[in-house]
Every structure is written in C-alpha cells, then in structure tokens.
Length: 196
Figure 1 (tube, rainbow, N blue to C red):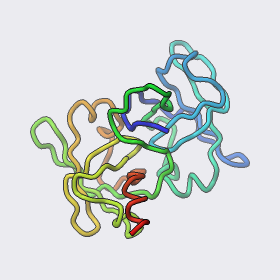
Figure 2: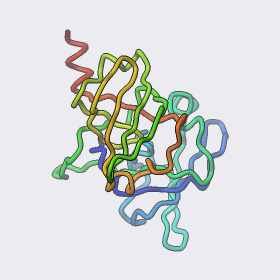
Figure 3: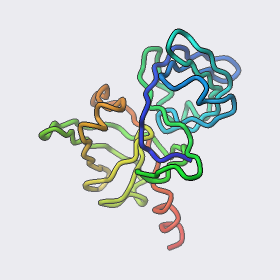
Figure 4: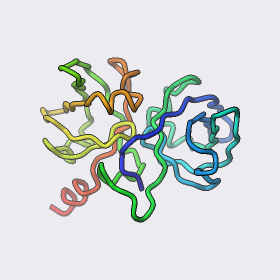
C-alpha cells in the first residue's frame, strides 16, 4: 500500500521481453533502504523487487512485469530513458499525506490538454466508461502513482490542478498531450459505489 506522495523518480535503464518482461530502473533511493522482495510503486503499478545493484551513486532495481500488467498500463509504451515515479510501500506509523493507493491500476487515461495557470498546471484527461462511476468532483484519484484531487468532472473528462511542487517532483513535467497515464480510482469510491 502507498500514499501517492512521490518523493523519488527513476530512469528506465532496461525493458526487455523475456518470458515476461524485465524492467530495470535507476533510482536515487538508498541502496540499503530497498530489499529484494520489497513492493515499490512504479508509475502507480505495484511491483516486487527481484534484484538490485549499486552503480556509482545510483541504485538500480529490477522487476519482473507480466504481459497482463504491460497490456493494462502505460508500460506498453515504456522506453529506456523514460522517467518513472517511484514510491516505497508504507510502513505502519508512516504519515499518510495523500490517500491510500494500492498499486492496482484500473485503466489508462488519455491526456487531452496541459494549461499553465499561475505556478500550477491544469491537466484535462479523458477517462473510460469503466471508471466514470468512481470519480467525483473533489474526490481522490491516483495518476501515475500520484495522489490527486479532482477539480471537475464532465462526462468522460476530468480536470486536475498540479501544484508546482508536484509538477517538479514527478514525471508530470515530461507529459505530452496524447500520452497515456496510469489511473487508479480511490478505493473508498469503489466500495461505496459497489454497495449501492
């Protein structure tokens, strides 16, 4: 489980199709702070550390990724050199500044526009019918693993405001119109909706 507060980014150094896929990400995470078998959110996808190695001042983490995960996320468009949002899993007692993010991506959403407003950026995103019933104005959502609040909902579009801190701490500033973004709905919204 994660909070959606991104403190680290990584760079894809390897993405190979083997029996499944092998993903290697170079990060600034402390080498000893991540163990083999640890859960790490990579662009909002919960992955298990298969192995790690230290190269200079960087920690390179390796993950096995199933074909199903690649097909259901924006990993289908991943390339060496891409920037990935990284979050280590929560520990009991950690501060939860965002909302509970499980790392189970529900869908991908298409970025329709980026508009700079003062020091912030407004993103407009097209969502599928599958997730429309789980989104609401002022509700929580996770995009590429980042916990965000929805500003507005209009049919199949949502808008969100990204403050400059989040813009600079995540891979959002590398987004381009048309990009696919990993989306996870708020678990509370899912349970409330399914019980009605």
